[in-house]
Length: 208
Length: 248
Image (cartoon, rainbow over all chains, first blue to last red; front, side):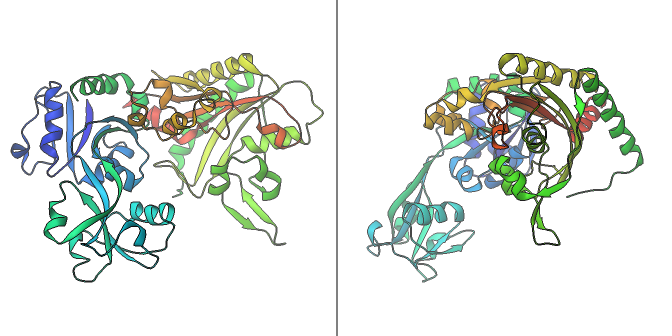
C-alpha cells in the first residue's frame, strides 16, 4: 500500500478528484472533516492530510511515499524529493507587490523592507536577480496588510486571481515564478517501489 | 547525533562485518587501515566538493589544519598514488572503519558511521566494473538479505547530456524533463566524482540506500599516479536496519 500526503485546505478537493479519476474510491473533502488519515475503500492507498508546507517534509523523510504539493512550497522548502508530474491545477504566481503607484520594477532599491511568508524565494529574487540588499520580514499571514500599515515597503506573496491585492489597494510590481500542484515522490522509495509508484503515476498522467 | 553501542548490538555488528570480511578476503581483497585523521592539505585535493564542506576539521597542537576522515576511498587513493606508486599490478583493497561528517547527512544518519567497502585500482572498463558489481551482490547475499536490488547507471553518459537536461536530472525534476523517470534515472550520482558506472543497492522494505559505488577514474591522478579505479562502500547501520526489517 502506498502512503500519499495531501495538503489540507482549498486544494484538497482537487487532489481527491485526481485520485478518484484514476479509480480510487476516496471520500469527498467535506466527509473527511477532522480525520487526518484514511484509506480508500479498496485499501489500495493510505492518505495523510497535513499542512501544505509539511507535505514535502513527510515525503522527504519517507513517512509518505508520494505527495501532492504546490510548486511554490517545493521551491521555498528546498526539500530533497523527486518531482514526477505537473497536475495542472492550483495555478498561482509569486509576485512582488506594493501600494498602487508606489514602485515599478526599476525603482526597487536597496534598503527596502519586504514582508513575506516566502523568505527563501524573496531572498533569492532580491539578491540574485536584482542584486540589491533588502530587509526581509517573515510573516505568517495577512501579508497584504504590511504595506498599508507601514510595516514594509513591498510584499512578496502568492496571487491566484489578484482580487485580494486589488481590494487592499496593492498592485503587482514583478512576477517571481508561477506555480501549480505537483505529484512528488520520496527519492529512495521511488527506486525501491518503482513499479507500484510508476503505475499509479502513469494512470494520473493520462487524466491530467 | 552519535550514540553508544551496547552489547547485543555490538555482537550483531561484529558478526556481519566478519561475514563480509571473510567474503572479501576470499575474493582476493586485502584489508587496508588508514588513519582516522590526517593533515587536511594532504587529502583535500582528492575530496569531492560535498565531502570537503561536510568534513570535521580542527587544528593540532602546532596549528596545522587536520581533517577527520569523511570517507576512506580518498585515503586509499592517496596511498596508491604515494607509497604504492611503483606498484604496477592491480591493487585490491578492502576497508572497514568509521567515517565522520559534520553536515549533509542523510536522514537518520549519525555524524559517525561505519563503512565497509572495497577499491579495485588498475583495472579499467567493463572487466573491473563487472568484478565490483558481482562482489557487491555477493555482499548482500552473504549478510542474508532477500529481494535486494542493484541498480546501475552511467555517470559519463549523464555528464554528456545537454546542460539543461542534466541539471533537471540532478534536481530530480521530471516535470522539467516532461516525462516520468526510468528507474536508472532515479539514482543520485555525484557527477564531480564518478566517471562511468554508478550503482546503488537497496531492498524494498527500506527507504535507505544500503550501499553504493562505481567508477572514479580521475581520483588517483590527483595524488600523483593515474590509475583507473572502481569500488563500493556499504553502510553498516543500514545493512543492520534492512536485516531487522526483513526479519520483521
